[in-house]
Amino acid sequence: MKNELVIVLDFGGQYNQLIARRVRECGVYCEVRSYKTPLSEIKELQPKGIIFTGGPNSVYDPASPHIGKEIFEFGIPILGICYGAQLMAYALGGTVETCKVSEYGKTETFYDKSGAIFGAVSELPDRAVSWMSHTDYVAKVPEGFRITAHTKDCPAAGFENADKKLYAVQFHPEVNHTQHGIIIIDSFVHNICGCKSEWNMKNYAKTAIEQVREKVGNGKVLLALSGGVDSSVACALLSKAVGDQLTCVFVDHGFMRKNEGDEVEAAFKDWNVNFIRVDASERFISRLEGVSDPETKRKTIGEEFIRVFEAEAKKIGKVDFLVQGTIYPDVIESGTGDAAVIKSHHNVGGLPACVDFKEIIEPLRMLFKDEVRNLGTELGLPDYLVWRQPFPGPGLAIRIIGEITREKLDILRDADLIFREEIANAHLEREIGQYFAVLTNNRSVGVMGDGRTYDYTLALRAVTTSDFMTADFARIPYEVLEKASVRIVNEVKNINRICYDITSKPPATIEWE
Ligand code: XMP
Image (cartoon, rainbow, N blue to C red; front, side):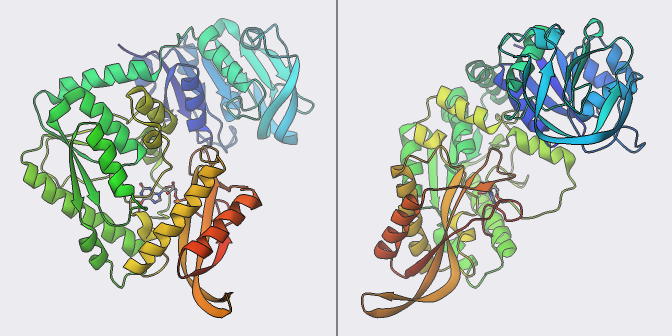
């Protein structure tokens, strides 16, 4: 079955992924494409609708991203958001100018409910708050357009030419702060574009399983399983599709959290897949002896991982397909490509082409993280696997600052487990995106009983985030922090001081290394 498609044309806006996610939340499949995509290619994809994103530029700057005017003649409904709205107005003969008063943040917006897009939303009141972020505005809409919304300082906060199926909003309906924003998007994709709500993980699972079966035939499939959400869901899908032809290799590098290796093994033994656990901890720990530089740690672990994995693949014999757990944000981000390297990610999905196989299968390539989780549930994976917080490929090795020793690994495992237990006791697991302990390389003086101690400082890190690209430190209640702190200092040897990390990302990152 071919999905009905809405295309988000990216003009450099920071919310491109968010718009696509919102459209999918409305039950409609959506892909993000660059504004540079040839118009002929867009036409061939036969989208039911197109959404132009915002962007940081001014349309009258000749270097700003533009698009061929023919797109407005395709007869495909278009919704322009922020820069996208200005671009539409400018291209069709309207006027765009620098705002007399820039708008940023929550802004009272007045809607004309006789317009096609807002009129179809019965829940939308005549006035509501929208989220604005602009320094240019549409001073005059093009001929044939009518204004459908305004604010105190923005005369054309919404405009449309319903005959030509062209719609625009200066505000950001995709951002949660815009009241009824999601229903405005819903109105566009359903009422204007005429999409049905067929995009859901039940349908996806069915189609993906059929596609994998067709591709694999009788071939052998290999999957590097980390126990993280993506590789676990990929495993569940592949095992439903090809059963015994699949072998999962779990390389235990010795930097897993407390009991984690056993838990992963137990879960997949239950799942009835060919599962190989390779205990390579000795090998990894000895390769990292004396290494304290974060990038060297990451690269060493990445390389070593591939060697171990390759050796296992050879033992299994001629493998035809390798499964990678690539997800859609990776695909979108690799499309831009010139960001600075902050950290070399080691991802079990990111295996290079050095294993002897015919083809790569990426069954989650078009899914956002929340969709991957829904798919996992749909496929019958237990909640504790589906709702796992992300865990970096190099594991605890990058949560021990400085040189790694077995003793430090044990300290960190015990402390981290207590922190996780206290977060679970306070029922905060689903609210906090990621939470863990970091063993710093710092020692300080303390007093325990009547004696002096000189022990490690542990840092606790917890963040709220929707995309892991930006994050805020979690406002954990003091009582929960206190419980964790008291327990850790009492129950874990060699820790006498605990700090809570109160930096956001940026300027910090989520992990410490
Ligand atoms: P940072 O520390 O860059 O982390 O803010 C962002 C998210 O990525 C995870 N992370 C990794 N995941 N391999 C992974 O699969 C890695 O090498 C890696 N390094 C960081 C991190 O836990 C957070 O969720």
